[in-house]
Length: 242
Image (tube, rainbow, N blue to C red):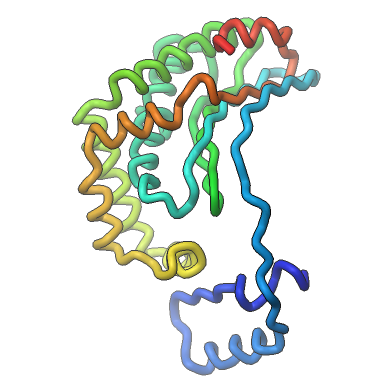
């Protein structure tokens, strides 16, 4: 607590129906914290990993990981578009190909985790052992298509409008406003306005998405983990080309 929760690391963000009295009360509560010299943390670095864990579960849970981007990287807006198109919902490529067209799993999606210096982009699914090989083959095929061809103009347009709609709808939530302000102050030195965020999305091009996919989704930097009634390591490595 004394080392990490210091005044230089804390941002207090407020949104909603508050008054100067509330601000004064918060200031009084935090003014007793002792100043401390910030220690520079050890630099973080993505390292490829391969992990299998045998467990008696009904389904096998698989995750393919790639190096992502930091929370302050300007390409985070393009990554949001890429993530939406590739595995961000029922209309995404992964969901349509692996579940809808081939019926190989119930749930499949991608997610992005960003930190101060690095991040991770990952694909997760849960399925039976009898369908996992075909499912992984299809995932790898979709990854290759994304790296080689990028996305279509229609996909970019739909994902962009979805992102912008989410931003505008979030204005109705005081907690969303609070989190946006706090994140901006903590990581960016100030929060972007709604118009500025929308402008960032409007300037994303098809080449931006393709370049980002080629940069991040490198098979040579891929990680893999599986939990359940897993197959032998060599089986997965052969399917993945690792």
